[in-house]
Image 1 (cartoon, rainbow, N blue to C red):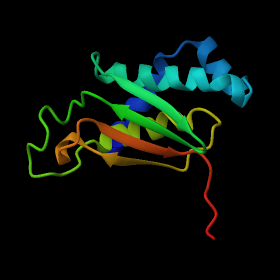
Image 2: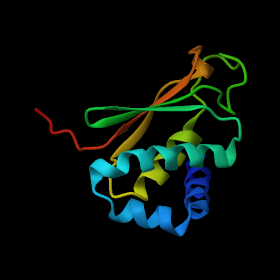
Image 3: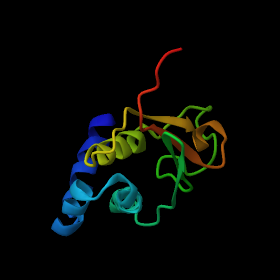
Image 4: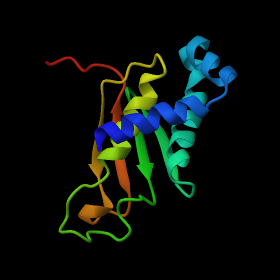
Length: 130
């Protein structure tokens, strides 16, 4: 599933215009955040036209919330397992296309476990051990 998510991120990034890709490469970090959000939305919608994604910055991480996952049509339909690994790989692959350093994308909650939404955390800076 992770390979499929990474492949989908390559395809979604390829759908970005040449101008958008150049902007991702050259804009300063403070000006690029809006374009990164657009990239994540576009990437998700390239595989799920009705996808709803919320992106919020929280310090050194992005909180990503998918409201209507393709993989979880009803909450907890298979005994409470997370099923959105594809999205984690998709988001990680898309973030790698920017020079914003993303060290991991982790699924925090899933409709497959009874949550209302599927949410992910993208760590943007390496956290130092205390």
